[in-house]
Length: 153
Image (cartoon, rainbow, N blue to C red; front, side, top):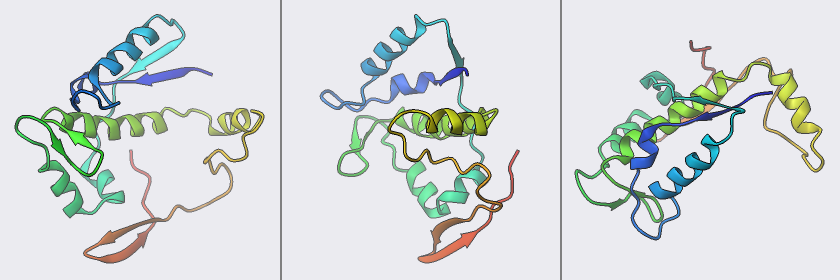
């Protein structure tokens, strides 16, 4: 089984200020350590199309998020999320990393078996051969909506 590191240079530009655990110097240190390994596959995140984002977030949420990043300096997005101008690309690259990781799973049955054979693992979050349909729920205009997305790609 191979391990991929999905990385974007934007992660090193996501400035959260001194004292915050998510700091560019932490990303740089981790990358430096991982680059010494020859058994890792390095990939870039995919671009996430708007229709994929809309599967889990309302259009209003996405619009508000895109407009929330400061032109300069730091800003609190919520009680513990600090963002800077370059955080915007990092946020969307992180979503793209998730898509790339999911698409990179070649044999989910093998991964499920390996995970379940680790002592102490009770569940793994993979639903291999357990379902025929996926339902997604979200709030649209203050109304709960549930739908079944089609396979993308």
